[in-house]
Image (tube, rainbow, N blue to C red):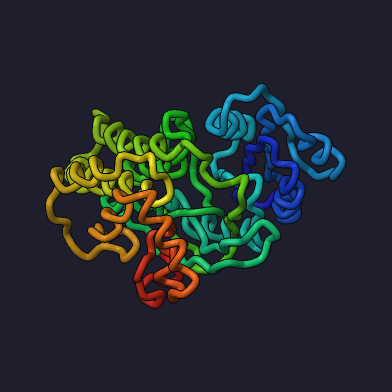
Amino acid sequence: MIAKPRLAIVTPVFNGSDYIVETARSVAEQLRPGDRYVVVDDGSTDNTRVRLLAAHLPIDLVTQANAGEAEAVNTGVSRADCDIVGIVNADDPILPGLLDAVRAAFRDDPSLDAVYPDWLKIDAQGRQIARVATREYDYAVLLGQHFCIPGPGAFFRVAVLGGEPVRDARASLISDYDFWLRFGARGAKARRLPCVLATWRLHREGTTRRGQGPKLALQKIETIKRLLARPDLPNSVRMLGPQALSAAYYHAALVGLRAPDTPSLRYALQSYLVKPRWPRPIEPTQRRATGHLVYAAAQPLSGWLHSLASPWLPTRFRRQAVIDQVFGIDPSAQKENR
């Protein structure tokens, strides 16, 4: 008997031999008859393919010349040929029960277009760093506060995109956020699954590469500008434009917290020029904080001095809290950073 609705999972991987089998197994163990699991090896030069084949898992392994994450995801979605799809990163195993919870949500509410769970931040060895409780879906917050609400473990209806690709290579460093902006602008109905069912792994190979800070900052701004330039954008979304662009400039400036070569001061000034005052309420981690902007503009000196002092400071005032954009925020006010 085929479990309904059918689900497809797509995992793009490039030189992911350290984690790919763990992740693929976490998905394969939850598949039901009729589901599809497509792993797209995007031209790996390590033994990713060898390890996957040796694991003898029920996956559809596609190999292509290296073309980037966006192309790998789009290839996988096309190959899966299924309306409800989830993108699972090669180093982020899902937790038991995710696929059944997703299936039940879409079955119980046929009008749903997307679901997403709470998740765990884990380290390179898979140990829990933090539990992240996501907020309830609100497109105005997602766009106007530059806040990508859905995270790992999310599933969505491909048909909502109306033929657009799931990933846009122009937003290579923020492809998830770019996707949810385009997806939500079409009036998609999304719902949070209030349980921990996915993971996101923090490790050296998965962090933004040195020298990509300015590129990341620019993509944050250009992604919003592309969205606002769409001729099919609903007026209700277009009205959020000034706030969305101001927030994009602000969060582009904050890239300077960890990438000193980012022109943070220029982006900060543009944020205030576009919209001097932001409406409330604003999520604690998304608020425009002058202190953060000054810190980013004073890099690398500010980061160096802070790193020296961090061992003697409370956790929420340490250097890592600045990088996570939660400096000085009471943990109880963030609901586990979300």
